[in-house]
Length: 208
Image 1 (cartoon, rainbow, N blue to C red):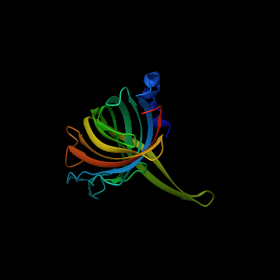
Image 2: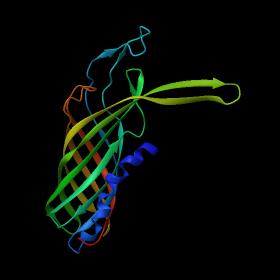
Image 3: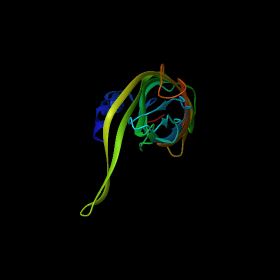
Image 4: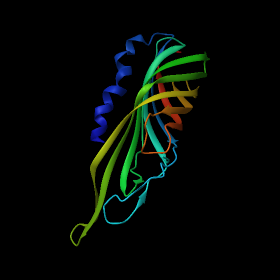
């Protein structure tokens, strides 16, 4: 979690513009749970040089998200978000964590008292970190597993998303959202277009 601190400035951007949250605008903070999918690249690696072959996996499983939006008017705003795997799934004999972050412009073609259609588009990056996991046991401390970072990979990405923000109260909302990310040369998996879906739960400051 300490390494996540480097992304805190990205998520704190909405705070810098909170003064723009006038009566017709607002600042949203949200957390989300979702998933992303990509097929396997189909490659096989002898990861440890011991004759054992490992096939690359699909991208799947749960993703955790944190984000914030600033609506300068009822129709236009901007925001930032991070989506990452809270666990480290297997990847060709190693453990790996995939993370997407993006900065977006926001357009709301429809906004009512209790609901708003939200379209997003922006840029960001896809990041993968690879870890070697080793389990050791002793008669004194029992068994424990340690992971060590062995490599990382960064890719530019384009992001687009659409969601419906439904207000449960004047400030608490739920936003089911679908996203598509284009990650050029995302060779760790078998495709560059990464579809995903997230359910965001958040709190909105100011009036709408």
